[in-house]
Length: 249
Image (cartoon, rainbow, N blue to C red; front, top):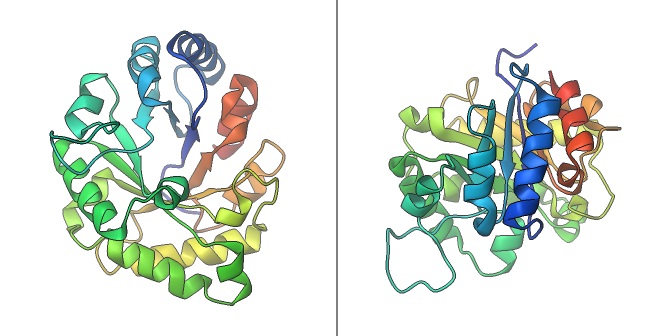
């Protein structure tokens, strides 16, 4: 049994206004309680970060942004910086989610974002994962290895305190398809092995994401190298998200 403390984070994607987020967070805090057995976080859209952080003040639930720009300021319409995220009361950010990569975020940008976000004081949840075509071609290990090595290019061993990696197979995101526990374990073990080139792999938390639900969460998170979950659709309902948090402990 790993000594790593599990993390369950909910990525809301483009859902929930500020008022809706405030209502959700109040409900979730009541369901999770004051002393959950795992770390818990929600990832609201930018416009709901402040409302979420305010609603969760004093609760054992962190707030992470869904992305962060690599520059401190400048002519970057539609983007926000680490300092802007921190000013909302949030304390982390996803970096390199497949949906952001598909929208144009490059490997080089992601590597700089990881470095600069950690330097700014954010906890970074670095995302990686392969397409169905890549998996069917037998190239999952090579693909994930390349993503991790590239993203961790500027990372130092001491950064482990602010780094989590989430393996999310693109073919399982929002599709209802879920990696089997064995597939999740295999991929997360690859992530850990490659990341060990830069940080302490025994300390690093590796999450699985991709159609995680209350029905499959326990089995997925029972795998040795799966230290929690990055939850999508099931995180939009406080009861279902709280159920996943409960089995993670």
